[in-house]
Length: 120
Image (cartoon, rainbow, N blue to C red; front, side, top):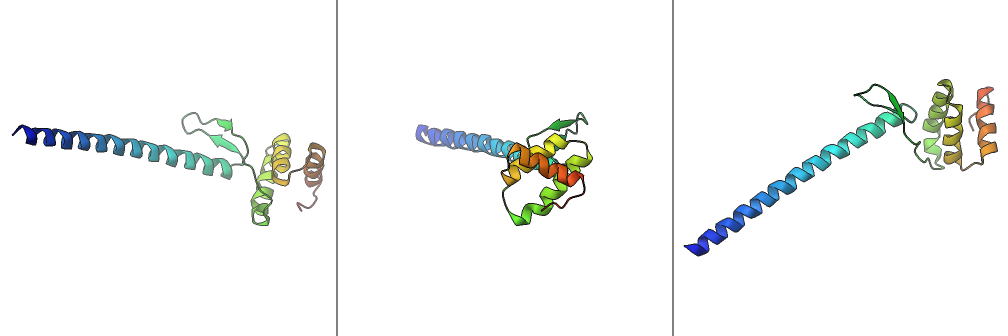
């Protein structure tokens, strides 16, 4: 009889441990979903994240773009959005990272866009 009580106790402990692990997984999944949502919102608004609680925009570092022709339309949209918002310095930072340019080259690039130049 005592042997059966030990097995029951081990089974109960295993179930409790499994439940605790499941709760941790659900908590982590919720956090991942929240972070993915914030990243999607940041990308949609040119590097700015607006906290639903505060309604204020928080500067989040711009993502590192790679030299990929398929990303060029998104990069152009982002640069033009930053310029339209008066965030020329942020636009220069983004184009520097995206195209691996020096500061002067990136500034000249953004200045050229301001004057109506071509993005390429």
